[in-house]
Length: 120
Image: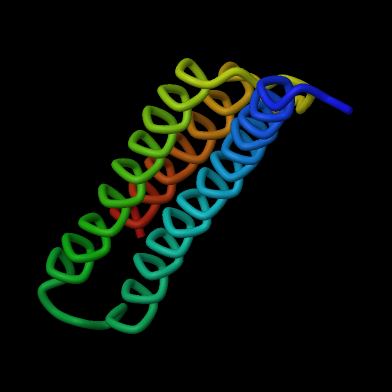
């Protein structure tokens, strides 16, 4: 029969592994929220395209692009911090580098979208 201390350590290891996987799901949720913010910026710009003066819908759309970039940054920061504090045990979470790359690419794409919205 296994020792109670060994069983408790196994349960703790499994809980940490579940937390690592939950961290990745949370990161993905933040990425979806950021992309939804960019989609809202595009939708607002399309909806108010002929509006005068043109800088008003552009400015409102820019607010949502900025929100998206902040969301991507916060998701990266929080996910990286959680990964530092946890031990993955037998799970293989995404590396901090790949999470940072995903957040950076989406942030750069959002900024490019904001620039294009101003050029339209």
